[in-house]
Picture 1 (cartoon, rainbow, N blue to C red):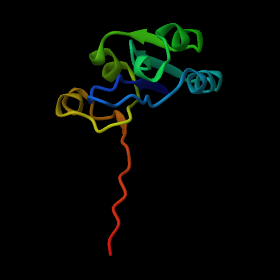
Picture 2 (picture 1 turned 90 degrees about the horizontal axis):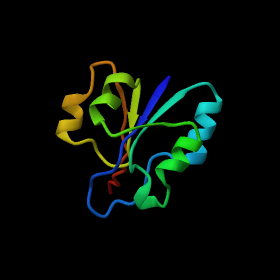
Picture 3 (picture 1 turned 60 degrees about the horizontal axis):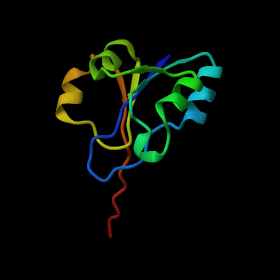
Length: 101
């Protein structure tokens, strides 16, 4: 499987869906990981840390959606990101729980 990690675009969102340590685990299992440059910057992880963990770095969101089987991020996908997705891309979406009384 080829996993893509997107940089978060929502203002104030500092998390990243995968840390370099998680990338290392995923690549050690034989999978490929693409990371958008700067994806972990606000969470304190450098591009070099992702590359050292085995991720392939790209500036292109289009490339992520073109080559990856699954694309992941913390927050909801934007309309443009959904539009760019191929029909067979698996998009990892955050779950939202609602409490009913």
